[in-house]
Image (cartoon, rainbow, N blue to C red; front, side, top):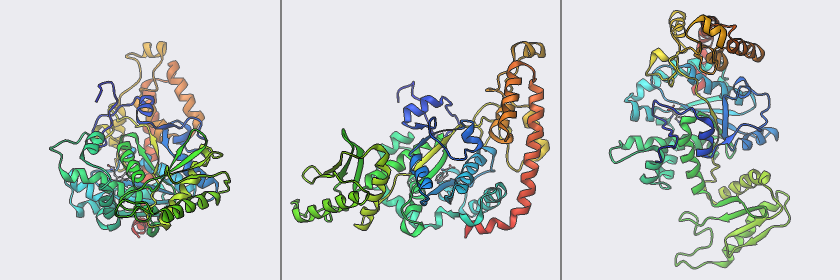
Length: 456
Ligand code: TRP
């Protein structure tokens, strides 16, 4: 890897925060210019900063069509504020009408953290789902499952494994010859997690969005690539309009009219192409150029805006012909809240992390010691002002505790100008954190009886 590349490691503890570089290097789309309906705090503040194919989901919502949200939890350690940020987004999608599926990555935590399945189960319910209920996820519109128990997820992981190889996993994750094979399997099972809600048994073909921290993008790149490789009809931008390319593979060669001796059955091939043409004209296009010889169908009058609808229609067609018809997942990416010390927040570094079940005294202690964006002396601070972008207490107000945008802008300005001192910012943060944590703890008690409903 070139040394000026940003690295992303879903299991690592360091994290690049050069977000525009990340967007560029990993081919994400910026959220600038995406119009989000009823934007949440995280959208309004640019904390959700990038996406892949989010339009598929927003379009479904606009048309009143179904869409889903999926996330996963690794049952190890305690749930911290960083985790709650994902749940905030899941909740937002749920309020927008999405159905919610949550994977308990018990297989992954056995593989990578040495947590037994029984332990994982207990942690998932007591530590995570208890907080999901308290944070306001709707138990009747949320389905939590265990990887180890959902056969179809493992089966899908296995089937998809056929579409990749060790070199690709080495390139994506930096695996090498010494990598434990369970660790190699984990991302394939996770691809199964992400793709299975669109199977017919779990709600059928619809866009599924996965809100993640940007460190999880490798999983999404892998999953999107795997889904694409299974697709029978590839939809891409052409010089003029949109092109559909037919992908003949081992699984479908018979259906596509390729006989075992390699000869083409012209009649069968014609049928396939007329199905494609029918499907596309069903969407209202009329100038469709079918070119079986080249394996393509062109729609010159279609634009990139039509791509999603064409994709969906052809995935349905693929399913009707016996294929998996998997739509690549959409995703959104959020920035990381820094840890209290300014490093990545991590369950394994309790001093740097606010846990959802921290008592007020320890939360207060952590915030008091948090990394400050203030100046060394009060005199200097009054003169030069502080830096809210570096000040952990301010950052926590922005990410978690302060709903009111105008108040936030006020304290940002006040800090920058030197009117608000670092100690005062910390004090404000402590007050809000205290309120937030005690409300959550009350809610946890009130909603404890709902926890089981999430697993039904
Ligand atoms: N790997 C994720 C973690 O470390 C957990 C996870 C499992 C997940 N399956 C997922 C996350 C699917 C998002 C989507 O926390």
